[in-house]
Length: 445
Ligand code: UGA
Image 1 (cartoon, helix red, strand yellow):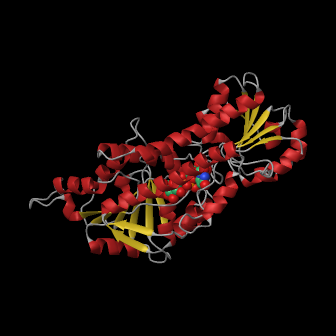
Image 2 (tube, protein in one colour):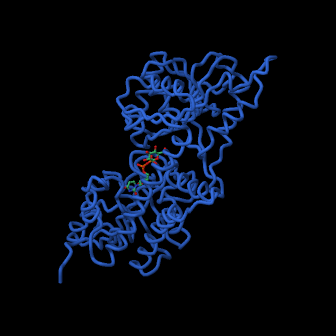
């Protein structure tokens, strides 16, 4: 198939590569000309395991090309996948400006039949809105009353890939969700994915749109639930990891997304839960549960800062080492990262902050220009009054903690991801604090 992918961000670029791997001829379009120039040289705009190599391979084999100008693509594409961002507005509503720009640009150009696949996360009803728009748009040079809806079929096809394992997820999906009003068009799209081993779920566009929000909201709910449990555990002297292990083995609950700590960040969960709140309210539905997910999450950063304040007897003029800036390990993305919130609050309270992240220092410096980032974890930790671990990069568990503790002014370790061995650190003399994780075996008194 001849495929256009509009938007070369996480979802777009990874989708373009996946479709090229499946043997399609793919042109990815992005309005950012620097990004396009870099992609043509084989340089991805973000860090993602395996991406650079796959990009080079697919480009070299002539299956993947890039352009910044949609009008330069010859008419005759079979599919256009829309993969542009849908960020939050102030109100929590998803901003569809990029999506509408992409649709308008395509609609002005298409003459032959085209399947328009909406991969961007869009509020329920967006596909129907686009179908309606196409029905009201006369086809170019049509005298017989034909509309764009005669040429363009809209399909919903949400994406479930995770940053940090984006390519792996895209090539090995759990499921392929396709929302279509025309069963044949849905089946045709399923064939585009032939070669991937995953169940295909054909449903209505509304069901597909909601499936995406429901998945992200539910995963965020699991995390917030674990964080509530973590607070409970702290009060009763229990370890939240033991409790979540205890519930996670029940197959009805499952072990994933139960890690308590600093809470969720990134470009998806916060935005999508906010959008669920907005969509539910707009439909006069109960949005309380979705709002609670966000409130519990926001309290994690506040809790980390107040814990440090309490332990250090105030924050003014204290030096804090922050380990991890990315919103999760395996990525250089700092969007809505808990680290940004923690650092902002520490700086505002008069602390001096030294931060280390193996990948995300450059992106963090753009958001917090006043932040001092170090090249190594040792440089961040030396002379610090406290360490706060925000991102669970596996390498942080392997640090030579015994030696590092000796270099600290005060040996307070706040493990915001409950990933370090608290008992061992306490035995080395650290004041270890988890988030619902103990530094000793619970006692029965
Ligand atoms: C998330 C979903 O997992 C993907 O399925 C979805 O496709 C994607 O959003 C999207 O909508 O595009 P992503 O944001 O890349 O993927 O990252 P996750 O691995 O889901 O982590 C999100 C946040 O939750 C991170 O800040 C992570 O540290 C946090 N988290 C995750 C926890 O605090 N506890 C956990 O147990 C798991």
